[in-house]
Amino acid sequence: MSQKKLPMYFTSLKVKNVKSFGEEQELNLLNEDGTVARWTLILGDNGVGKTTLLKCLAWMVPVPAPPKNEFIEQLRIAKLLLEDNYDVKKISEITKISEEDVKNPLKLPMKIKPVMDDLSFDVDVYDKILRFGENIETSLEASFANNCNLDKKPKEVLTISMDFARKDGKLTLVEPRSVIISEFNTPNLFAYSASRHLARKNFENQELSDPTFNLLSDLGELYDPEQVLAYLDYASIKEQLENQNIVNEENKKYSSTKLLTTLKKLIADLLPDIKNADSIVINPPINADGEKNEKIVEIQTSHGLIPLFNVSLGYQTMLSWAVDLAIRMLWLNPESDNPLNEPAVVIIDEIDLHLHPVWQRTLKAFLIRHFTKTQFICTAHSPFMAQSSETENICVVYKHGTKVIIDSNPEVVKGWSIGQVITSDLFGIDSDRSPEVTKSTVQRRKLLKKDSLNDTEKAKLDALNLEIDALPFGDNKKEADAMKILKDLAESMDITKNKNDDTNK
Image 1 (spheres, rainbow, N blue to C red):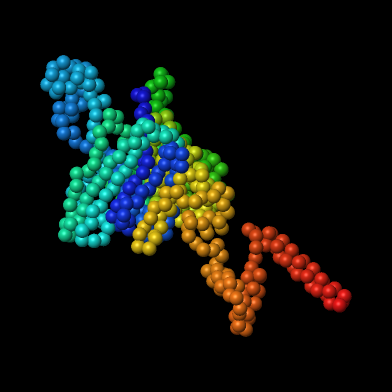
Image 2 (cartoon, one colour):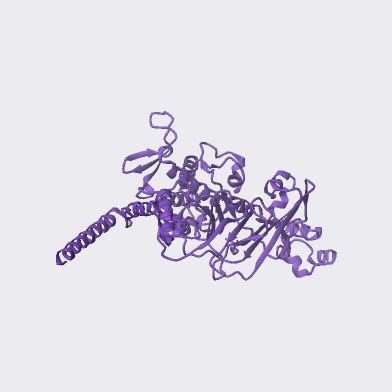
């Protein structure tokens, strides 16, 4: 097997005059110590531009640019086709390229540019992300760590950009800013939208083969997990039958069997209430009586065997997404012993979609444990996701007047409670109480600040004191009951003291 190259990961994205963003804003994708962040969580209100940032990342993935020197391209092709069966000296004389470079043309410098430049035929793509206005100049700039692992400081950072404008109502494209690179390791990017959902029998849908289609289209379809598991099961059985006729162990193949086993373990680890990989039952398409089997994949739970399509929406969404990502990583790395541990960049919009808070707390740890070389860039609305990401890279997108700001270094305190997370700058909510209780506490605070109160205000303050004093304290019923006992005890002691004082008088 050939030596694997180190991957390429995002380090930053800059946007200017892109939809809700006006003046230039930067999304930092590095940790505080300057290392490449394996996990970035983008928080922010609806409509501030979180999804736009994810789409811009997908559009800025680098791809090879056509070389201006045609001899270099011809040389690459010749080297690939002919290996060493050509005249090195003669080609060197013709192309003016050194004999050493002629021998190793794949190491010759090449140009890379944003994939967005290849979409120049689709004017709608550009027009949709331009900020509103007749005369607007837009810029997208992305930087990448080349030949660098996650959680390491990049030694080489490459930057590419796209510039375009709307002048007098007409779209104008500018030559993309490309970069010369000696060794190109394009990011293996997979992108998922907030509309992602389980779909039936769509394995042959060619549109879905694009790993960014889910994010950039309106469909949101994920590969049918039942079909994927059934096909892998069939391939595994065929693989095992073929191996029986192979004497040399080195020539035997186990790729489908390994992936099926890995995938079942992944699902069992991901979904609560599933004991192990054997709880994922894959049935044959035809029953013993010759009838078509309508329950190809079933899941063994405490309630018995449940067909895959009968599990809850949260289960369906997460299971379908995990299977979709796993099968794509297999296709990308067919020779790998563990495709899930190969380098990748995964973008997920609203990662907390349909998930119970308990699941939200554990999801990040699950993903980085199973996808060890994957850079995750996600958006969320969940304080539980924020709390579980307190040691990771967190960014906040928020409105400040008419501007939209990206804060790539918000204040995050380790060990925050959920209430503290909600009322911090990460979410900008004034109180972790209900709106009605918050209103009462604000009114009480205003009255207490006054130097003097009239009779109506005194009566109002007394009523608010009674209302607020009656509020439960503690994080659960047991703590609230204990606090009530202490409060009642304090009140009874105060009453006894007052009676004794009256008697002594």
